Length: 220
Image 1 (tube, rainbow, N blue to C red):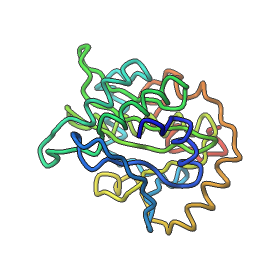
Image 2 (image 1 turned 120 degrees about the vertical axis):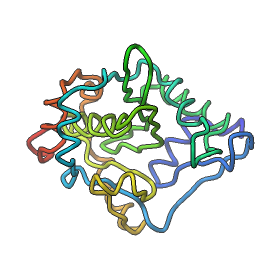
Image 3 (image 1 turned 180 degrees about the vertical axis):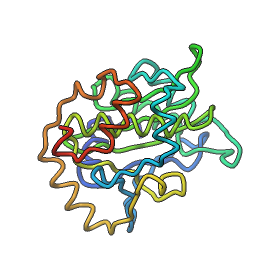
């Protein structure tokens, strides 16, 4: 695995596969190409009335890329119902390298200077590949996702890959699509050059809700 580099990983994303580990303490990494791919359509993104109120009330300070390492470690930590994790040491190293290259980013929710939720993922062309999220406070990971989508729309991204379908993501409009259809979506997104500064743009809660719900042609 030592010869598998961050550049190799980017090439994997470009052809529609992604890495996973068997367990936190297992150093092996394998590549996954699901038959059905979880995608959150940016133009079909759904935010419930309750979550709109929550984001507008700004219960957290949302930051970008200020604690990438801490976000990965929080995503890898044991939690009720998730005693083990697929994020092992080689995967952690690869994403830290991608972060150093400006290819991996974290959206973070802070409260009283404590990191209470967030997510991280990889950007390549006009695609953003969501990797993992965590929450230590009610709605923190959901707020992070809404802020991410707002920034993706502002910057002109076209694809938000969620890898797998989960009940947590269903509420935001996630769909499952066959891998061959996903690959066509990915090919189109890879031709787009979004504005990377949009990811780190400060947004108020009202702005995050508004931008996350706008059609991509209006937001970008």
